[in-house]
Amino acid sequence: MTLDPMTRAVIDVMTEVYPKIGTEVHDAAEARRILALAPSAGPGPTPVARVEDRRVGEVPVRIYWPRETPPETPPETPPETPPETPSEAPPGALLPVVLYFHGGGFCLCGLDTHDGVCRTLCAGADAIVVSVDYRLAPEHPYPAAVDDAYAVTTWISRHAKELGGDPARLAVAGDSAGGNLAAVVCLRARDEQGPPIRFQLLVYPCTDAGQDTPSHRENAEGYFLTAAHMRWYWDNYHPDHSRRAEPYSSPLGADLHDLPPALVLTAEYDPLRDEGEAYADKLRAAGGKVESVRYDGMFHGFFGLDAVLPAAKEAAERACAALRAGLA
Image (cartoon, rainbow, N blue to C red; front, side, top):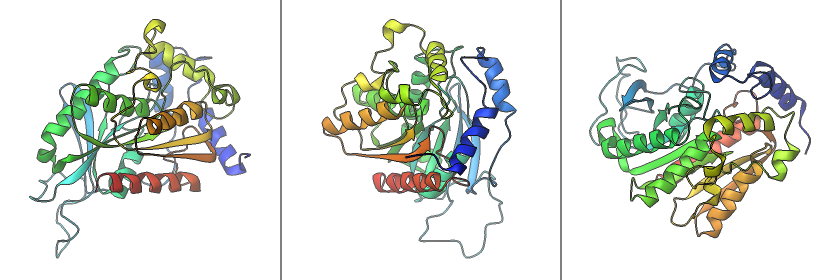
């Protein structure tokens, strides 16, 4: 399938404003500075009932609430408190909880870059979303991000009711590097008899540090995420090549038995396409319940661009529906 003109234009604009890491930009701090200057696009953020920035230990998190009262008992009059003003969740209104881990190659991005995606999932899945600002490489290489992701998941599981959340209805989600962390949190929770995770949403996940698949070669240039980007990300995140095949680094090589049901979304013109689909296939072969969907004509980074790409809107709706079903 060929790229349509709108998708091509979006890729070109994103490529222009994104730091040219691995070729012209080699310093992570400089890459973050360039990324911070990139203009925002699209309409205003999806409204949710409340948003709060907090810390879980030393890890910053941003928590989104979709509503303050159960849908079956709406208030007779609109609340006097405006949206995003802190208030207590009402008794008996326990909501499912989704831990979200942002992409950015383990080196870039954070709470602000993925605010729109988290709001979309919060409103669409009718769930509390906890966005995790895990430590970034190269200042904090592997396994710092894994440790942060798992620590926050464990804390949220234990304290979900304090947030108005249901500890029995917990999911993890993430895109790209965040998809890696979501998958790894499920592995670690199984291995350590940790939080009971009900569902995993993996959006074009990074699952193999080997970077040696047909899609890595076919889509090495010209589709936003490049092979040079991926080499730079891995060199910063996990400089010790001898350990890159570890399960919590490259989950594609792990034992994938006894893991939560999953939705895996991939994109045709993405270097990570094959490793994401291989992960879905291996989960299924291990007896897992898996839905895997490839978005033809799309590229790494399309998820979240609902305002400009119909496929992105469809992917968001599919993700929200899967979360609702998985956490029902």
